[in-house]
Image 1: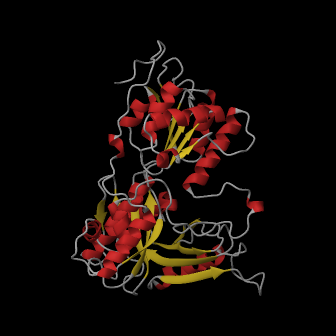
Image 2 (image 1 turned 120 degrees about the vertical axis):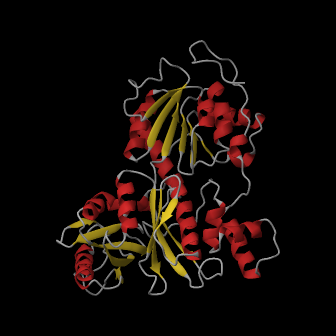
Image 3 (image 1 turned 45 degrees about the vertical axis):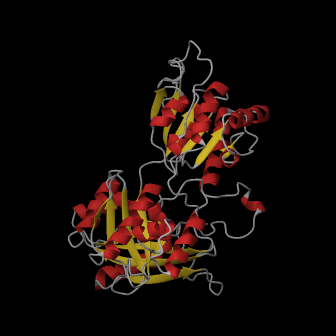
Length: 449
């Protein structure tokens, strides 16, 4: 729903009810992911798309019916039809499950408030129950802002707290996802599926090295929706005039800037300096942070020497394995612009667990179901609890070895820990960064000791 928040916000302000059709499950190859929505207002105006055109007509009519009869939410499935080429279906061969329900701002002010926040680009999550007992189907709860305050009510108790925690975890991760909840005394006795729509702040692309490649990469990053920062310790090169497309240009030692800035699992760190006095302290820190991508430019000889110096600096092998170097995919790139496309393509593949291979040389669905999270970021305790379908306190007790939990709960939490790769008490920012050797006169100042 948040993909069309601007228009929905306008309809709410005009007190105009609308029907919202949302993709709640995808099987096989489908054009758009779960969470994508199309809406129809009482005047018949439509906004959004859920299939790229394959089933829009049928979904539009279903929305009109829900608006007219004012009934309960409806589920519908659309798949490929071999029998009739003109039948309603997905020509790509996939299957979609769609939930359609009516929204009225006057009856659900928390939804109107969430749409207003999302339209302003602020962090917003809307949790919607998409499968479960009929009295819960379509019910919503929202989590807003950096403070992650929750609004709306599902049961006014444990279920609200469990869903809010789950939505907050996904909001911090910047991911729209469908998750299972309930079936325990800690949450709700009934098993439910919850689709959490997320409008997160823009992910960050941190580009270190004020070179021509940085200018091209910054443009590519903006095209992908990143908030781009170019950082270099040389004031003569790190200027806004040289990087007009960057959201921010910082004059500082790269590792010192990285120490004090905010990163998360969606952050891409691109090191383009290929100069050891910058690279080694920067990469030593970056490889220990919960970011989604770390890449460094340089020849294979530079890469080999860089690995040697990082090992001497005490960086363990498991962290070195995270380093994408030489940076980018093999596209035969020569120019800064081509190299930027190569780097951007590798970032997309890394964060989406793509193979980077030509689709023409692969078989199977073009859009496979999302794999279990395998990024090098560290999941939160809330995410482990949500994955296991238990409360945060219960997950904490299992991880801390408490005997006062059932065997089934213990097994669920332990499985979630393994599947998500949870590491308790991680303090990557405490990684010590030593002085870089040899400050040159053209630098902003000497690196910190």
